[in-house]
Length: 278
Ligand code: DGL
Image: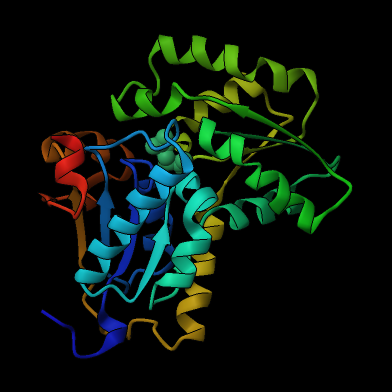
């Protein structure tokens, strides 16, 4: 199965579930010649409420799986996994590994005039303080207000991102950020762009929303170029989607996010997953 020309191998992308598709969408639109192999760990979603050790173990298993399918680089399209596992993954993995937090922090730094930046994410991402550190590294005199929104991920996974319940929950979660008058809000979880219009409506037009997917796609392009791994123009790209559970459901809800790019979805057994899902 090994591609002879390493440039023609796919970009591996993983997330706990559907959220990373928002990053795939940006990668595909910026790099249309590139093949993508996606893995959504749907058997074990959400990651955001789990311990750093568990997230590191799941992330290593996802990387191991993607490497077994000969990917040329790996995008950790999950803020929670980036916060807790990126460092070890970069150290241990023989291909370039790219996370989403630095990209989001950079975009927020460029967008914010007042230096009052909000970040919403999973409990794991917010608890890690990773955004706070990443934004401060770029701009020390900044106020970062972080808010965990743990119910957003299940709402997106259930295809309920625009349900009335989502609106009520969003109002409740986002109220504290209103009070501190941020001018920029980082969607610090790759699931959240799926509810972007709703979050924008609740925050109002004076707050700029940052989706790290776009900036991450730029980072992927730069990394491939630097490593002489950009797919040649004539490459016929493939887009493959794999999950650890319920492929049909992933296909149905995933198509709401990225459209017909998702054809077949393959259920795979990844190392460690079988025991933990029982
Ligand atoms: N989409 C992921 C993130 O960016 C994970 C959400 C979850 O599984 O809790 O954090």
